[in-house]
Length: 160
Image (cartoon, rainbow, N blue to C red; front, side, top):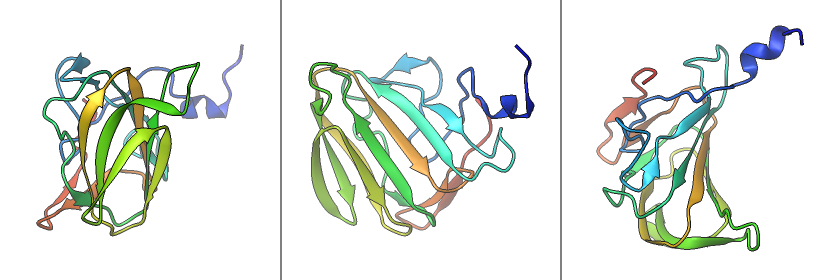
């Protein structure tokens, strides 16, 4: 089969970036209760990409817990918690607490959380993980950047 001009936009093997705010684990692909996040879109390896998309598996309570620190972005972000039970896809089979603008929200179902630009969000703390599920985020920017609660700006480092 011939490869066209769009082959460069098909991510056929996992890509990794060291993400800020504790969101990315380094080293082995599976440890500390989660997998490394696979990067599916990033201006770091797709020139002109306007979204940063990452996804990983949570298979037990992550270590550390919470594993993502409080931060903000200057663009919108969407967080996804995706259950994987084919007989009950809306059940997360786990329970996480997500902080948005200083308020604590309990997550125990498959859901998406829209986080407007500038809204302080996280940490994400797990209370229980009964079955593996997926966590995914889409940042409406080509690179994953933001500021922590002290105003310290961070960005991805490079492909890991």
